[in-house]
Length: 81
Image (cartoon, rainbow, N blue to C red; front, side):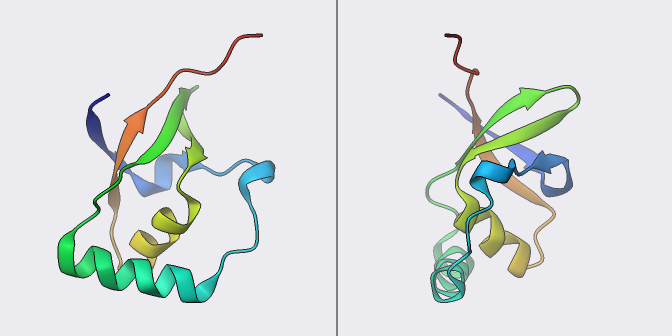
């Protein structure tokens, strides 16, 4: 997998991923990202002109808190059953 930069406003968070966000975790991640950069890209899948969050809600929220407009992400494919 390779990382690509995606505009944050193009990322959709499905209801199942909208868990309560731990504010302390977001703050700690934001501090780490500000200091070292985003070390682990979030996971998204492409879907009709947008990207659907698969993993990385707290990292996404931390980047939003830092005022970022784009985030590093790895693209994954939707599972087919």
